[in-house]
Length: 198
Image (cartoon, rainbow, N blue to C red; front, side):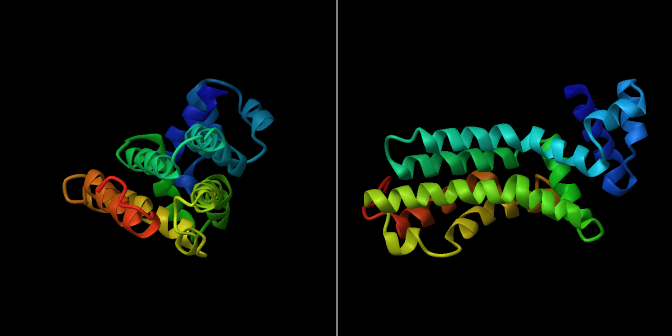
């Protein structure tokens, strides 16, 4: 199974979603096309599995951290954003999948749906959980932490950082480290009741 997903990622990266072929994925692995369909009934199912293979471990780690949270909500929020920005700097599979979704979602709406279901909704749910925990403990200002849309706004800079790096290249795009520092400072000043880390 891992070999099939690696071959699928290579096929999607080289040919795009529209040009990728299940037979070509099978050929890359050296197996019969029918075996691919045994595991993945369609190209959409294969792409969904590829998204899960890339994003699943990161999201699962974040969910575990939230579930096991015993200390500061702010420190957990900081850690999760650091993880998010670290993903931006990674080359390879994740970047190819994000590029595919951006480039081809207009022609293949199922890509938008898969991105929303597999990445966006879980990530927003994680962010909301941390914000609620901070508001409930009194660490965060409830009127800010519980505001509609805050979780989405909080996540947007990491996505834009990734998009800019794809569009402009690493040398010209804003540095993730600098964006993270400003992002954290803005959140700290608006969310926390005390000047944590000031």
